[in-house]
Image 1 (cartoon, rainbow, N blue to C red):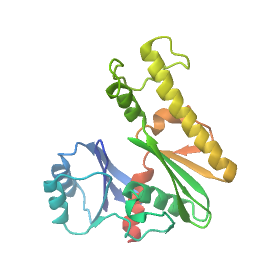
Image 2: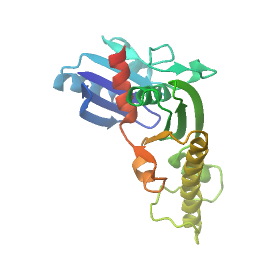
Image 3: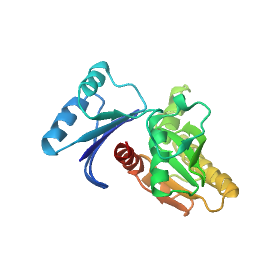
Length: 239
């Protein structure tokens, strides 16, 4: 069995795979990794582990993982199934590497756009030659709400609200309308731009806000909240 550890900005996701099937998935805080790792090894016969991190682990957790056997730390030097044409490959996030790897494993020789709606929204594109060309990064839903509050004197800190209307008639509803409509327009606009370049494009939506946003986006997308975890599992087997 494989253990996948996805260290994100706000939390850590762990998933245990038996071949391509997820047997266990959990989300933990950043200070609970060691305990969770030990408990999963008690429950499952884990043979290999992959770690994908977009932020720094604390020193004790990083040393703990380095002391374990059969752990692959994903970076730009890890073997992947696509050709990386990013101009600065050393700066390409491990999460984006995993997403494009999954897109290549699942859709070989097809053009794919992966939209990851998490702390940031990332857009990652590969062509029919399985060449990764790059994409875009913008603030995610939660980050936009925080920015409106922290960089102003009086605007409140709100969280997402699926009942928002396009025209806000209070300060709160105006914030919801601006942020949520804005993010929907952004994603749909990006989809239109990529489709104009390639009408045969396959579009994947993933990330923590994927399920929340999918009903407001164009119906040409495929939503898969486990796309990154599956990509990490594929990379572990590939290596």
